Length: 467
Image 1 (cartoon, rainbow, N blue to C red):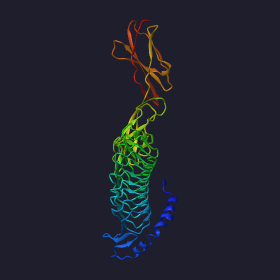
Image 2 (image 1 turned 90 degrees about the horizontal axis):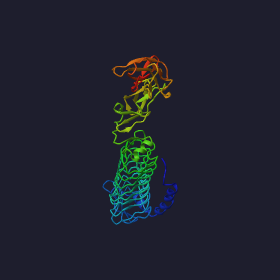
Image 3 (image 1 turned 120 degrees about the horizontal axis):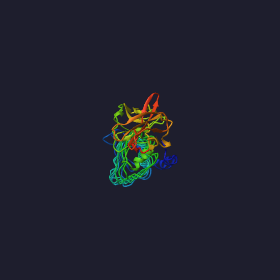
Image 4 (image 1 turned 45 degrees about the vertical axis):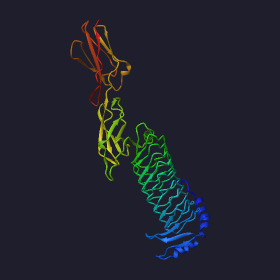
């Protein structure tokens, strides 16, 4: 995982500076804590009251404002902050490995930087009155499960909940304008997030390594989704992105796995982004198949870039697009292609065979046809004859020959002359009746290993015999 912020230098400062400052003032408290009995209570140490509450947690009641690092690495299991307290310093409770629960007073509106940094056993905290959460405030609180934000929350700082791997659900109010860098990065069990309207930016690595995320709805009003915001979210499925988004980093959804589908309106920035970055895209929510259950690909919509090809002696392989529930499947991942024929004139198939999460098959027909004769001409020549010819562009080494049909304009049916075994159309029909009008049409044919294939008949041309 990419490390964006906290440095070893900061950690060394905490150890050498803040820890030394508080070590002496809490020596007595630590000694008292280690010697109290099961029924002991009301033990005073450095203006703090230590009791064992009804749930069996050794609890300290804080009655005064706390300076930076005041209870750094403290041994208490629960901290009660009274209404007399309106400020708590940076890293005040950091690295307190025994700490399981904190109750803040309603007067605490700011959770300072690193307040509970590294409190690995912290399970719950009340943030109902908090308007701002500083950087690293709950970083590495691996057992923190439930977080409820105030409706008045305005800021959640960088890495505020970094690596809080037990959090399953969060809801962020509309007063927060930015989900800052790596705020929830490493929250591997986070499965449900609700981001209310008002948020403008999803910051760098905001949900990096959140493996539990499956469906995410980006609220209307968000303008940008930054670098690696959802990188390594392996189970991410539907990501709904509104039309308001006008920037998504190329790495925003890096390494998210083959299930990822971006749900966006056609022609929106997000829709084009998905197409350009080879991500599945749909205009509608896609229902995920149950675990170990494959999707029948026979219900997919298959389209070809062309349904008709002209015979030229070469193979023709149409480009295939397969859509399922509105999004585009990937060849080689979701399906394989098999073509029948594809060289000789005839009707052939492009077969789609399910792969990976898909099973079953379906096919789409396409044709290879003989090119019809275009631009041929006729004229009356001497001896009551009709000359039939075409421009050179109709001559082709792939054409075996031509058929010519003609009739008196008064007759209903054409007579046929069958053999012009040449790629060049040039022929003279003779001995017609003078002053009568005749009609002529032409088609060409191809002989491939004894199989005759014909083009459509050309348009009809007519001429009056005068010579």
